[in-house]
Length: 278
Ligand code: BV8
Ligand code: ZN
Image (cartoon, rainbow, N blue to C red):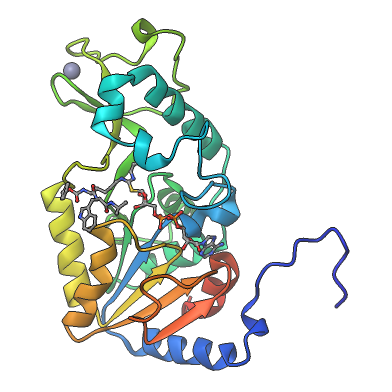
């Protein structure tokens, strides 16, 4: 089919000579695995319009995420950091889950031996899950079990820098002045986004449940991550060390490509609906 001159040609699995075999091999591995870990990064949300960290729109006002997503940056200029999180909340708030999120949501609802661990703070996995279960066809137990293990927190939650209180918060952020920044309703201290910043430890219980899921998995399906941020990037290695295998879906090669038994090139929104047995 001739593509219209203005149409951006998405890299497609059919372009690579042996990609059909890779898809078959990956389907077989996923189909025969008793336990599967799915690890996602920003790439799974790219087709929803969420800028990735290292992609073309990763920079914000020429600042790199690693510069802004740190306790030091917040200490030095909480207004600037809140402006960035306010910008992302608004941008992500207008995005919808794509076919990759939906395929993963269905699989985790249908199969209790599939766990999802995400580095994403955009809440699109959770939204896809809510919508997939909205027809009430899944028991509450499978819904809570299908909840993603969120390694790095959420854009739509705050944490108090004084009393530590955590709250859901989807409101736009008033960044007029330092005095207008979000304040704790309990102790009036400054609130911060409830995310894990670079240099900060992950929540030990959350990390432990991710490690256990990685060690128990026979297949770790890694989708849309550059695998540069740790400890998240080490989870697939734990699966391999425990005798399992790694399957990768990414539009580009990553440090995990050489670890993966099969690596599929293409956009997650196109690949996952064809790859996952749902
Ligand atoms: C910690 C929340 C203890 C905030 C985030 C070991 C070695 C080296 C460094 C370290 C190490 N251990 C610790 C570190 C330091 C650091 C780290 O890893 N630094 C990196 C930069 C080298 N780690 C930490 O600080 C962690 N804490 O370890 O505490 C400690 C502390 C100090 C020292 C030692 C130990 C905390 C890390 C968490 C930071 N918070 N997010 C926020 O979001 O605001 S990380 C954030 O960046 C994301 O959550 C994610 O994890 C990461 C971005 O990576 P990706 O999601 O993969 O996105 P990216 O854009 O990079 O790539 C997108 C990919 O998708 C690409 O491959 C692209 O090709 C692909 N793609 C694009 N479109 C598509 C696609 N694929 C498929 N389909 C498409 N359509
Ligand atoms: Zn407080």
